[in-house]
Amino acid sequence: MGVMIDGVWHTVEPARNDADGKFNNPDTAFRSWITADGSPGPTGDGGFKAAPGRYHLYICHACPWAHRTMIYRALKGLEDAISVSVVHWYKGDDGWTFKPDDEVVPDPVLGAAYLHQIYKAADANFTGRVSVPVLWDLETGTIVNNESSEIIRMFNSAFDAFAEHPERDYYPAPLCDEIDAVNDRVFNTVNIGVYKSGFARSQAAYDEAVTNLFDTLDWLEARLSNQRYLVGDQITEADWRLFTTLLRFDPVYHGHFKCNIRRLIDYPNLWNYTRELYQVPGVASTINNPQIKIHYYGSHENVNPTGIVPVGPEIDFLTPHNRADMEYVT
Image 1 (cartoon, rainbow, N blue to C red):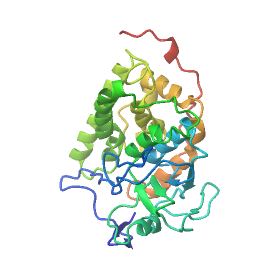
Image 2: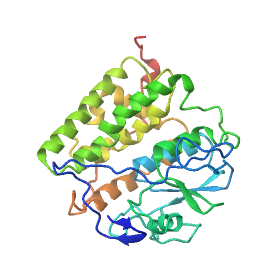
Image 3: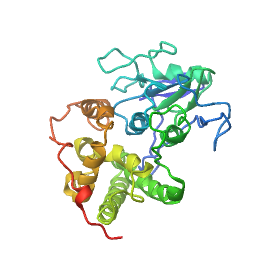
């Protein structure tokens, strides 16, 4: 699916599996932060002050990492403050592209045909993977950040002066440590765990990844039997980071990535919980299920050589959930 080396696009990406067949996810490269006053964030350079109309977001509807950022943009009410481009669902030798399609929103910044042109414009000698999401600064003409976990924290608070819903805080200070702890386990075994299972290149690597994945799903199921949300008594960042993986689990990961010990719908608490999050006003508008399925089944030729996209399963995320009616142990 390609990689950039010294600012030049190469169609063949180096292997991302180690000698034991385990899939490794490389770190993202651009790690500066937008802050309310432009002061430096936890990493990277300063000078990126929050302002409406200054920043542009690049996403793919299929990508769970990019999806996080769109959920925050919607829930915080930042649609008028942060513009968006959407790449084509197919990721092949050219990487992410803006090939004309009904769902593609072209690049208004450079008129780029390929996302790797955006990366090259930010760093003429860039070496690394060209991924979404990407947060671009129209004022300085560079990428601020391409790490979804950091972009959602910026959206959570840096733009509150311009947000329609500044009162919504998904990373409240009293819960930060617990949110971080839940995030750490969920990321390593669920968010990236489905990819470790699907892209494993040995039986041992697959067995380890899929076992760890379902151990954590079992743990989450038990946790949600005692509390409505993952942390505290409100929806937090931990919930949204898990949600984008759960949404894709039965339609894609269960079959495509062989994460098939159980389905999401076999977990009563997780399934009801997922439907509750889906039904939060504003969330459904960020979801494009046809694009999700066709991207995975149509782009991963090493996993699904025929490119055939399954018709099912039929899933109704609008079925009423029971989370508000449950009695919880406190």
